[in-house]
Image 1: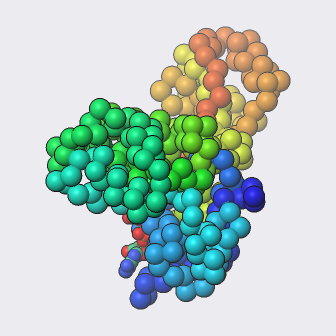
Image 2: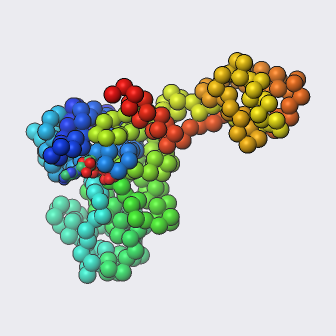
Image 3: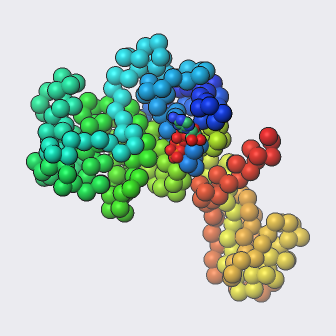
Length: 306
Ligand SMILES: Nc1ncnc2c1ncn2[C@@H]1O[C@H](COP(=O)(O)OP(=O)(O)OP(=O)(O)O)[C@@H](O)[C@H]1O
């Protein structure tokens, strides 16, 4: 089996004059949770719909575990569970009855329904009608439907949309645990960059149809270090002093920020210098940039190039 769960090449799709996806080369490694990120209109849903064979690209290819989605659709989509937008359920049927329909359609054994209900924590509510379910429970039922066929790939489009904080928390845990508990690779889209930071180990950032970055979150952070925070009593004065060697040093409410990467030797030397100059140092901390900061940086760079 290929170690790449999803691979797209030069994938492009327009809607009239709008380029929704442009030359997308997405690569999602197997066994990971990949956050598929970007603001509204970035092209995430269009990409997901192409991957699921729901719409055709104008150009390019997409493959799931090595099977071309257009040429070998059945092989590509077997073992793919998806949750795209708000899932539609039969409201007058119970959660279990809804899942039973899917199970019959897929020809799965009876145990599959109970297992899926258990996986999403709906066992106790299984015999209640869905019209009495909260939005979070309906979303979990949608996920149970995606999980019923023990998928090797789960594609989730904005799965926390409209959920309350408790629902978001539950959904996050389910996603984070999917590789270990179900052996599934997950592609999860979101426009909330901070949210995905808590579930994904791999990210693909999109904006205006284009891929800005894809790699592990660790590599993303390593490539874009946040900086060093020095907590001190006279921040403005300390920043001025450090500017002779660190031109971008800046003072902010009781602290100096030195952008970029700084190794242990350098941090120790900075500390010594400030202490010798009689500054009170109450803390030294390496800052991680938020995904939002990185996204702004990457979009700005892209804007400069075009
Ligand atoms: N069926 C369609 N007809 C016309 N335009 C479309 C259609 N689907 C998507 N678009 C346009 O393509 C662009 C990308 O949309 P897409 O839904 O893929 O983005 P997204 O990243 O999923 O954003 P969102 O988070 O808002 O769903 C947008 O400008 C959107 O308006």
